[in-house]
Image 1 (tube, rainbow, N blue to C red):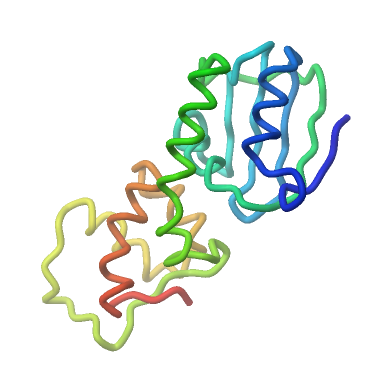
Image 2 (image 1 turned 90 degrees about the horizontal axis):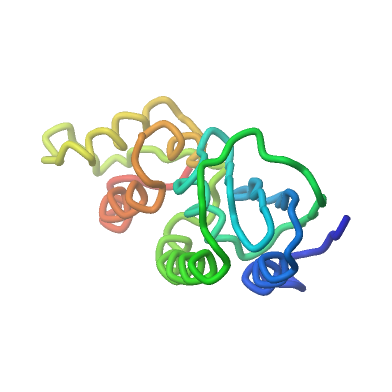
Length: 173
């Protein structure tokens, strides 16, 4: 088993090492945005973050900037939700990772809920995707759970919510 801290060994070099090693197994990351990735030699075959799996989970994992990781060799995935060979996987992780920067500054703590501020009004015009995300706010769910329940890619949901936070209509509780 290989263990480490992503603050010391960043996520992308760890992914490069695992994809290049030709080893099969499971990478687990303990972090608010953490989850698990399963590998077969040179390929990512499954990803899970909470209730998210496949592309949505991989998208969240690409945002990692810290956490404790452990790689357990020869752990077989319960399902296959991805088929990303080494170069395609690394390219995708880099693209996804680059897209998270601004969102993580607006939404730094995924364990806290969002809430409407006093500036919010029910007369606020919203689109359907905005309505779907905003309708979950009164439930007081942690941001991570809200992202699992929208049915949309996590980054797209946060992009949908960002204007409301920056306008002071919604805040991270």
